[in-house]
Amino acid sequence: VQLVESGGGVVQAGGSLKLACAASGRTFDVELMGWMRQGPGERREFVAAIRAATSMTFYSDSVKGRFTISTDGAKNMVYLQMNSLAPEDTAVYYCIGRRHTGQDEFLVNTYEYWGRGTQVTVSS
Image 1 (cartoon, helix red, strand yellow):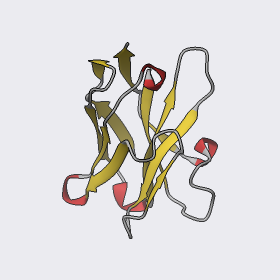
Image 2 (tube, helix red, strand yellow; image 1 turned 90 degrees about the vertical axis):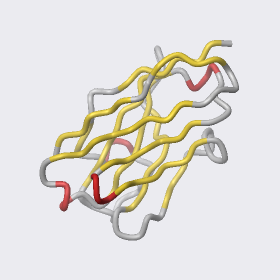
Image 3 (cartoon, helix red, strand yellow; image 1 turned 60 degrees about the vertical axis):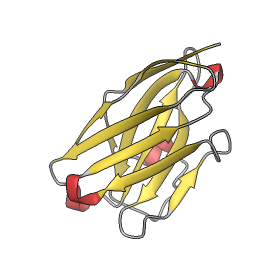
């Protein structure tokens, strides 16, 4: 499975961005898709995930109410709509995926597939 992100950029605080992730390959194996981020000098942080079969969503407390994850199954796309962005949202955002739903969705180390990332910079 290959994941390619797009949509990053520079935005002022309070603004919005929409990230997209294009999945290709054995996508029928993937049960869970999501996003994680890593800011400068920080550890990796789970952001959001969505189950392919049920569209159940999961969000970290830091983005809940501001970010929305969605999919377009027909196009194998995953999106992250980010609103009310703040400087602390500045990070490289990675699209992630895995085949299993039995593990904690919030643990980034359980994801098998990773994109190369897209930079999001929020200026104050």
